[in-house]
Length: 192
Image (cartoon, rainbow, N blue to C red; front, side, top):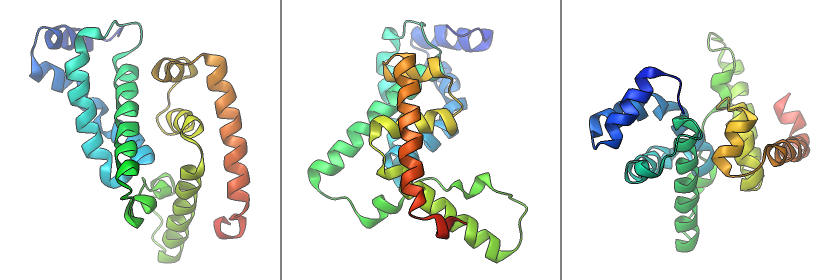
């Protein structure tokens, strides 16, 4: 369970039905969860999927056993909400070009103080290529990669969130990196 006394207090209040405490408990994770969800469900859908995940978490709060951190538990619920969202889109066969092209912009990882428009355009193109390459990975490889590299989850947290062993996390990360490198190799000239 959380070693943060304020988080523990908010969790107890939320379990007793205090929705404001639940909102205060969940709000610090909004930004990182939406970044995570944008890579799974698309940038345009991230906020909606997050709200679905929050409602699911509120309903399931009584089942939170504290074996993992609240953050890990919330991200696990968010992942399932994103997968449900993608299944619904696929079943309606309404995936638009915007959904395909959406995703968080990795350009923000570059030098934010770069003022040269050419450099900014190059960074944006590199980010677009990496995002599109990530989308080509199967979900069981993409999710651990995003959690590890973009959300700074530890192996144990990823294992808990995905319901798999730490060894499986390590294996999936290894395979995901190898597959991503092969995909990016095709775009080597565009990235450099």
